[in-house]
Image (cartoon, rainbow, N blue to C red; front, side, top):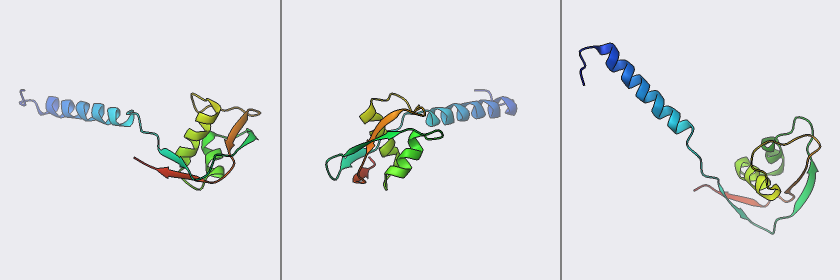
Length: 102
């Protein structure tokens, strides 16, 4: 590698750094392990305008909302985070989730 031209060297280092940062940002994350302290009780909830899985999870759980979002998606067979006003969702009815991050 010829480092006679400092501009080329700095630009290559910058490009490599940006590529590595991009890979880190888009790496898949592990879902938290959810352990139920009691049998899971669910209630049916109608999605209101402005609701999101995250806002529902914050209202429903005292633990990590990521685990509650994952649980809601699993219970309802959702593949993504999109929900719609008027949609009926089964959600955890008891605040008995214990979360363990691996």
